[in-house]
Image 1 (spheres, helix red, strand yellow):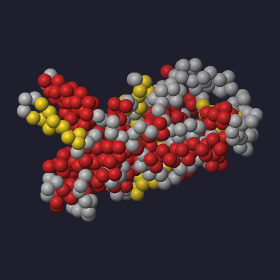
Image 2 (spheres, rainbow, N blue to C red):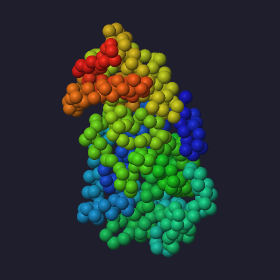
Image 3 (cartoon, rainbow, N blue to C red):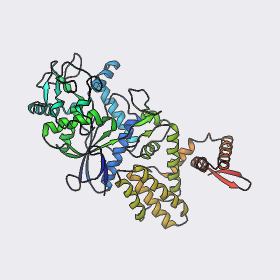
Image 4 (cartoon, rainbow, N blue to C red):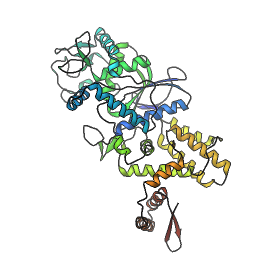
Length: 461
């Protein structure tokens, strides 16, 4: 049975869909004012993999991931560029889709945009005012009255009396309470604006997702996902808005993926320590990035470095090397490996363990290549399970030739240096380091052959 860690209850729970055999899942998408960075790629790849596994498990999934195409950052960037905000957002939406395709991220079933959801947003705000959970502030903006929603803080565990004004929120004399957040902003000169019962203006960020999710999936649905940084205040505010307007439970299961970190700091545009997907794609093949992301459990921090990506490339090369020379034909899938793989994925989508199953298949496959029937069965199993993770999508020979083309600068002198480092590691009984050097050379087409007298010969594969 599939178990998912629910941020709301802070424990793993057996997943029970609201409607048998069907799943509704909403994931907060990108704010499109710049290129996607690796943190965004993690959200894309993680929930793409969740979607793939639901479908593999036989569920009829409706996957919704929104696009925020109007907010302060978009308006500011368009002003800095001297361009219309729509031209800016269209350009970065196209770039986002290109990054997704590169990373084998399948498109969601629905991709609503904030600017196309204005009537639904206005209707939701109007209902909150009717329910006396929202009000027009002194500056004409519409605010949500946080202290009137009695269960505010249930997702994040935060309490209203602990949220001191000026620490986590900005003091704003237009509000009745410093903790209240904006639902509708009155128009400023030169900014995009829409007609509303409260005058020309535009939506606040939080209300957009409440409107887009409930319009696509209904007032109450199965799963809401996003990055851990959205847990508070964004997702907390979504609950307050949605449940305050409809009177129904909003979401059953909340899923949050962990941060991508660089030098022990969260990767983010505000810190200036981010790497865009397209920058990384100049150095590494897309599948390498995808394997790097999935090699850690989605809730764990993911440490970004060239060394980590190099390891992912070596690992992916090992998988492709196992498939080399085997004709992929319809063959019996090995049920033992299917069972192990599904057990890993059923445990809160543990892709790290699922990937270890792929390497076990590859290890066995390397041993039985002389047995045509067995090797074809294992190769078919490896391809099938990898496809659920969006991996091994390329012809093995094509991938390996591409890797070889990128490692032609591995000179005999460099190989000799690495061999000496391996010999020293073995002398120091650092077996893991010695194995790593051997495996990395093998991934680059260099085979080591240990000989008598603590010597090592090498040959190109």
